[in-house]
Length: 344
Image 1: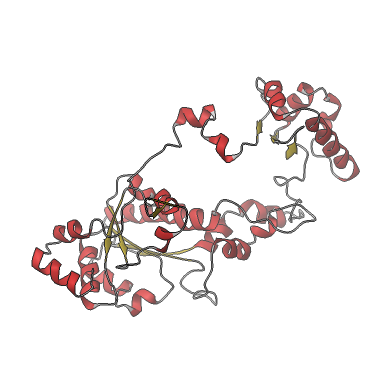
Image 2: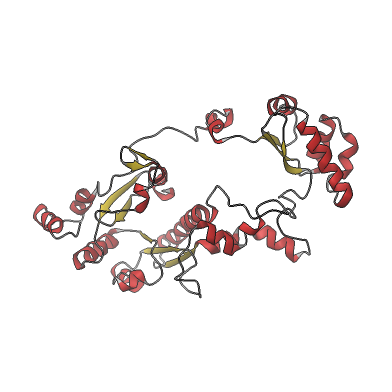
């Protein structure tokens, strides 16, 4: 989707009949999942039975005309189908092939099944999320899936395409969603290497200090405080009438507990909307915690037009099969034969 948004012609190859399982994951609107629509915009969909010789040959024909082949099977599946790196590279030496898996192409977990929660658990990220004395809390954003398995391979693909444009050969990119999640823990590993305690509630950005926390407001609602730099903390303390706490920004132990308690009581004394009015004109890095249904109407989000109601941009299953195969030179009689034999 990221590459399609930048103008790439992305052809999504799906199994005839069933297609991508996410197509049928509720909630459904007009027979298709809104979750599928959200991450499949601007693509074209064709169906190919890759277990048939004719289906594999059609995919290799696509490979000859493509810049990139992205696949998300378990390690070894493409090779068993006769579509491994050596085969596709021979067909198109300039092709970039990107294989996205949970744990990578090698290692003892290579063939292990998993999902985002498992990858985050294995990477150590899940174990850092939550209250100090409580259990790890799953993140509502799929960091390993969408970050490690979406954004990072998109960057890797673009880098590989630059190398090809400069005269290099194509290459096979091995993307592990777990590796991606691990790479996003650079600061946590650095803190640990520096001798700091690293666990739930111990890190400087997960509630360790009063200057970087979420506080409950009166009557419900929460406020995020991220006055990490001393100048922001000093301004915040002065603005809320607690200048005596300025030199306690990074206090720990009993002193730290006192600062935490002071700010908990402070934010609990007013409603979220009252704090918005109080802090709106101050340079303090504090914002209300929005519920999902509030995000679209937020003035900054609205001004940037990041959320829009769209329809019809994600393809129906096999919607473009006839068009794409025609572009490859498949005539109508051959197309009918492919339909009759279940290849498409």
